[in-house]
Length: 295
Length: 273
Image 1 (cartoon, chains in turn cyan, yellow):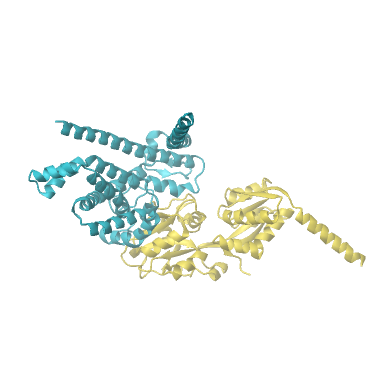
Image 2: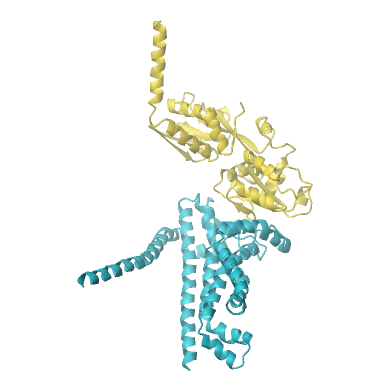
């Protein structure tokens, strides 16, 4: 009896240690990042770092302004969502509600494959095909905001499609049956009942996709042009926060190296804010649903 | 007979001295020479355990100055100094550095460019091929990232004369991290222009790129050696007139076939034999 209890307690401890490991990892990364990045602000003011576009880290009078890259990351990410959300939502709805078994199997395995393709392969595809299209449509070199956003939108599609489908399928049958029984058509049911009920999950999917887009490095590096200037419209070249870190990492020393960690902090804060938004949104939409059912 | 034995003993003693080379040495100088120096030092240290050498990439001028002041015992240089500047030091050519300008073949009509126009393209003053005798097509400038020795070389060889020593390339350029990436982007983008080490340019031309003549001269190793092709220069190691044993051995190693293979592997051109 005692032995059994000891075993139970041992298992509990081991599982707790595993769970704690991820917390520890986040803590370590945060501490490390801030420790290496914050010293930059002894030399450069926070305002200059965030709101200057002068990135000349190896000049005699060095400039460490990353506004161009913040704008680049925002532009590329938002634009990719503008493309990926409508397509992803539609595909998720189709898979959950409208497709027959055979086509849904085919589509689902295609989406899974899409999710498994390494980002460098997306980049190659981008150089070969997407930059050419972008060059024909927008002119210029083809290495621009539009190409980067298009590549990213394809990469975020699987996340959005999967989570949309799963959230729709997870809804209780009664919702759909009730709506149909009241005389609504299938389409009305989807738009007026199922989508609103599944909105928290769908939103989480979109934000997860957004996280992937903002953190993606290799694929955008290959099609974005990488010029350290603020993006000028769809046909302008772009360098994102991630691209800036990887481009300069191989040779940066001293303050320049520190500034890359500081860039990392900005990226980290971006992701943190995104996560907070998701959690807030989830909470409010869940309480919203509960309020609806309670009324 | 005695003489022969003496000679053998002397030779053995010399060999012994050679094998016993040891100590810590500081070399320094040109950043362009640095890739060759690093790779050569790595191999040299493997061949001569006990010798520790460091190379500080402080620039050709600073390298020569430190050498003259006795702070270092060997310096690398990408500049060709005259006797007055050398002040008794001896410059030994060890390699050639030639850069080829490659363009996408869809820019028809341009096969030759003047140094001045090339500088203006990379400074951002000329942005259309029609201004250099080609079709009306925007120029897509492909540049390297700042870590590249080629990035600095190209500025020194092409842009420094009209635009000064401080690097001021146009910001409106695709930034690439590798020779291979330059090639991919130039080959895939109509109107693109880029530059790569001459050794690598052959590959790009094979893959369908076009090399530009500069001032009417084709970028070939022969033209570099004949000093006809302007985007090229010699690289040197500079030593005191009577270098120490390790410095002498290192210089000989770089000039040996093994050393020249290292030169080639770092994308520079080995000396003609």
